[in-house]
Image 1 (spheres, helix red, strand yellow):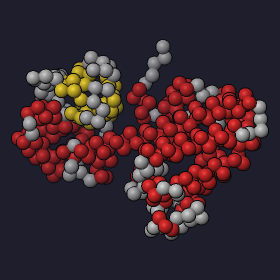
Image 2 (cartoon, helix red, strand yellow):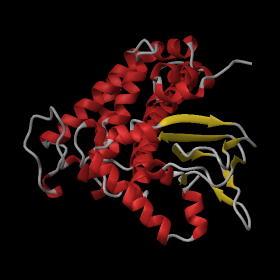
Image 3 (spheres, helix red, strand yellow):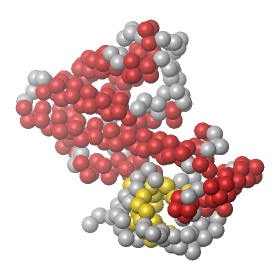
Length: 328
């Protein structure tokens, strides 16, 4: 049985790509299948892009992201959806970008470097690309990728080549675009963590920039089923965000179950002290852990004191069961 480094999967793009590629079975035969139809497929790229952008401009929710400019678009910002057509400078800039992406995809060597291309596609549709107002929802990205799969499928099946070559190339692209979709959704998973962090009362006074700094301090942690995450009486030196799996917090009169999107232990960041309950995994769990020392190094003394005051106020005002979860 091959050993997989699950922490490295989250932080090493090339390692992530190699795992996904091997798991879905994208190999030399798939690359050869794409190369075999390349000459016929390349002339189809511009029409695929035009069809996708006609659909994007057909809905206000998808078209509104063209109102915001990105670095390099070279044109004035459009201030109204009514100004947007396929001939608008910003739309043409994005279409050219999409066409270059597809051409890179078709002509790539499909080694570990393609992970950088895949990751950039995910990042550019989020605020991490430089414009905080461009944050395309995941549902729209899924719709866009779904349409791309269908358009490629139609073009491949219409090629003037033998049936086996069409099927082989179709299977190759199905695998490849699933890999691309993973590199898109990983950015949205990270975005969800930031949204979750903003819901933590202790972080309410932090700016978006400071939230980003704190998010970079989170450390992935995988715990097997029926294992203690923390034990009652242990020093409280970190908090946990649950990204997958479920845990039981062993409090009276009965355990409290927590799952993806929940967090525990934030009071420990401000006040330290001992854990007040055992937390045990129900199944395989992935956490993002924030250590107290890292958190304090990230903040100025006056901000640390404000966090401490909020924590102390919560201890006095929250119901006992909730406070006890927070103290884990």
